[in-house]
Image (cartoon, rainbow over all chains, first blue to last red):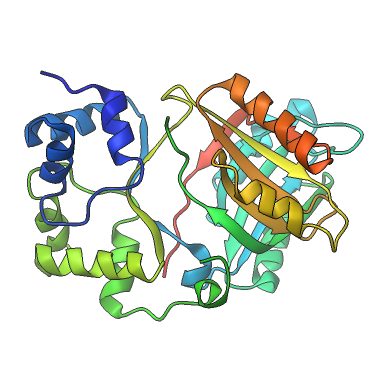
Length: 155
Length: 158
């Protein structure tokens, strides 16, 4: 019998048990078989509900102390072109379109750049702007403190 | 957990580096997943279990396992920002940190200095959380929900 996917997500949302047979451990929590857990997770991956599977790192602990949110005010008819180009840059780890909130917030394209220090991130950003010929207004918001960083919870 | 040692760069062994680089993208789903994953590192299952446990205990990895696409699973996300006076963010940050629907919360050097992500079961709960935050902190919330995703692929080489 197929296991209910929301029960499986709930059991896994805080991570996989770190032991040699983690799926058997999850199965005993859920009162089902190991094979059902394995096929249930495979089905979640198949439906693209699992976006990544593995270690989720704490950037600061790995020396990636410079974490810049770079925001761009891109003309509406250019956003798909520029968004797609920025997405191909190795230093860009996230690239999203979000709404402008005028007059307070003019930026509609958001990217994240990670680096070991601010100077190298700014240099990389300069090179990207030059390489992609992006002349629009932009701003760089470095993080100075990380209070909370966890995977989103499924209720 | 919020400051001090936790913010310092961790010292990693060569094996730990290889495990972090090798397991950011995927993990096997089969009866002996650690044994299968351990092959690429030339170690056995128990050694890999010990390495990952050690990384988690030292807070080098925040979690191990699947990261779900909460929007596909029926939930909702919203990036939000608040602008407080530069020297008066602490109380607002504490209020946000105490809320279970706040998944991430960062201080950034900008007029909008507090940036946080709300993660809830429904879109209506996002609106309710924002209303609650505005009422309890006294600051307006800039809500910036994702409209289109061009790329997500955070991978950090160590």
